[in-house]
Length: 395
Image (cartoon, rainbow, N blue to C red; front, side, top):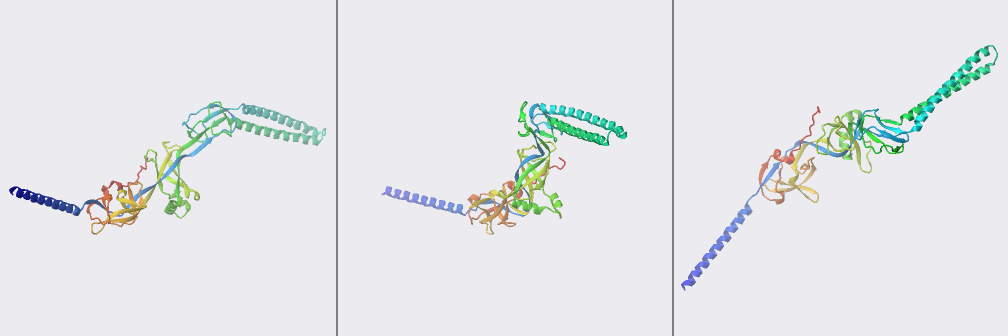
């Protein structure tokens, strides 16, 4: 009987401990469920943002001239190397074309012969004049002698023209640089037979200034045209925006450029306009054929910026969580535009000044969830640090 009583008391004590444990666990879960989590919140305010539109571009020197022979001949000498800088008029190639030197000798000989014939004809005239005066010969013979002089002088002029052509053709065997610049590739070697129908012997590129060629769409074309100020086309052409050049190593070129020309009509196939900007290139850093990125500045007033990481997408629509008056997260649809960095959005619709946007842990949020806001300054958010491009104007 005593043993049964002890077992019953032990069982009751165990049941009491179990119920107490369940009660404590339930209370802890309730406390956890009622606990409000902290989230970083950004209060958006309008600001003026300087952004840049970027366009892939190709670089060409302001003069990019192919050197093609005008006559047929064998390459006798190549007096430059690829990449050499040459001055205008510098000798580049010498062609071996004997027929032109022979034509030159023949033309010189023809000149001497024609000059002698003119002299003989003039002597005949001088002889005929006194004979006519004495009426020994008729005036007809004097006139005939004078006509002979005229014919011989014409033949002399033709010989001089032939000589000039022979000199020109012979000079074509000595190919010179038409402009100052850098030599391109040299596809032909010594002894190669070349003519006007063959490919270029090389290219000379004047790169003291370079063109950056790129394309813009119709929308941006309208924006550029409307931004130009002036009463005349000439004045508006001078007021095109300055542009910058990002090099392939992601460094900024140290010269500021200017849009020089925009094509007069849109390309119907691509819906774009061809544009070229001009840049000084004093150090010869840029060469024909380089690739780069043109950056065109753009100022956005009263912009509302938020980190791109504070948003999410559903079926192509962008959403963010905004804190309402009851400290609850509210999913809000936004209309946004990407910044140059790709780390921030410019909100054009869906937010207003002083709205509070939840910028962290959005994957743990749901619509209507209550949170505890922790205010964060925009200056402390790296994604919102969009800096202007600056270039030393004295460089």
